[in-house]
Length: 600
Image (cartoon, rainbow, N blue to C red; front, side):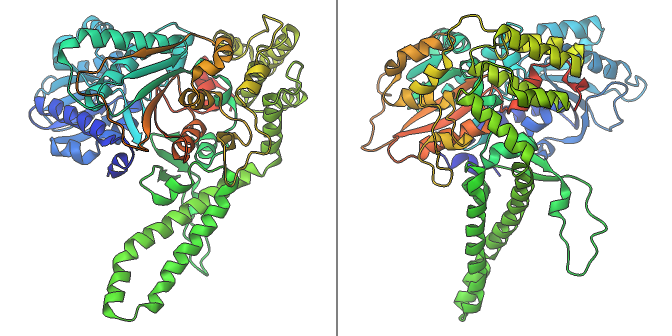
């Protein structure tokens, strides 16, 4: 199942196995039959660590979603609540426990907090008078979850909001703990670089934890050479831009959750000749997306304009492979053909699926609305008219387009202009509030606090200098056979990835001036390795860097890092870690107040 996690430079299956082992140990603490009551948000991330079969082996017979009222009846000895440490969830658990039928054979209750226990939550259970009902109260430390062979995520959705709006550094503590777990499995990371306030905090916490555990160092040859910690607010522009890679567009349009996407079913209906297509499926089509699927691994990071050609090339290869059966004459040849059949059939169905997905996306990317929106984004990125009210944004507000679309564009204009002129800022604010409702004043306030949408304070706009020095805009980006990371946004090279690229060669000293213009400190730390664990590098062997995005990363940025790993002369391989996989929509939503009551 998780073979694709061990294909890469770093075997991330080790991390998954460690997480599974801990889960087994906890389940075995609760002897007898079990039912798990899930905090719904956790089911996705847990699915990447353990399938139902593993739970079943440990006598888990039933699974329920946590909701108020009575627990469903289940003839089991143990009820285990798997929850995040949130106060509102404690009230639901208390209600569940209180409504338990006392006459009925009593059941044992247990709580497993993910990723940390919380005194506040236990206090709340005590106030509700149910704390004594629990036999085991434990924590399950699930910080970094392997999503793919080179990708780890904490799936901590509120990390950016907590750090920049609420001044709450819980997520940074979890990050530091996660990095300590990683070093316990893969060896100490000798070099740490970072940029941004949060990066500084995480590095300080890690170094402190390292000092505290000084005696218990493990003797593991380091797998990673460098750790780069990057604050999301160092590069606020990249997430609000529309991603143009295949995987990025799937996420922008349909949303990828825990490695799965749900798609409209019409395109996937198997129609037989001569049959009326009256009974089309109504359930959305659910596809798993990771590098275990050969074709997806090949096309996920391509610019969408290069996907069509890749799919038709693949179709020709598969047809040719099926044609081979006519040439199979001897028994040996027939046997060989038959042995390849399952693989060929899987490839054929994978091709059919991705052709359908690509058609769905193409319907959107070829629309006028998509093109107009992209044109405005690219004008902002190249610095065209960023200091005055944009007529496209004006018209979009007048037509009451989705609010998130407006906010993404206005934030982009603000970031590319180092803040908006006061009268432009006030105009946008007024228009948005009058069109979409005054309750959004809280959201606008949040965007201002986090630096995404703000009035201009100094007359100097640094963005053009940053753009020129770091070559953030490349004219005529080659989408088919890219030679630079800018292909992921058809011209714009993500600032975060340029910083990563420059760090590898020629080093950050060459861009000191630009680093000072970006928010937060930049720093370098070294961690002492135990004697005898210094790596002897082979001739031509690549170095491995773990890039950790604090506050979220987009699929287009991941594609750009994979592109750098594959470049012949880069001499560097990248593993990506983040607090959350994001796109512009989910990111802005996390900064909104009460997004659920939004106009669509």
